[in-house]
Figure 1 (cartoon, rainbow, N blue to C red):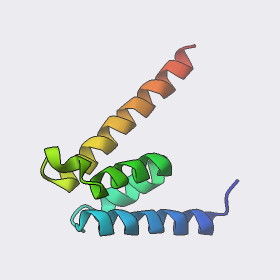
Figure 2: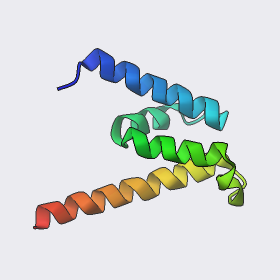
Figure 3: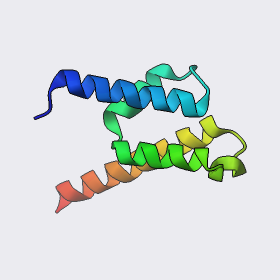
Figure 4: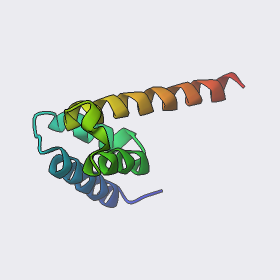
Length: 86
């Protein structure tokens, strides 16, 4: 089990990275929820894609990030549901 203080600090650093990458504070509460629920490696992958400008198709890095997080959470929920069925 992880130390709650360490986990809180880890999540805050992740939120800070999201803010720096997206240049947007409007969705701060959502960023915190994402940092608490989505695996860090998947969040960092999406941020990396934005930094490499792979998200330019959508034209809006915030929109791209939100769409990626929605897609990821839907996939995780589906996998979790399948795991309970079997």
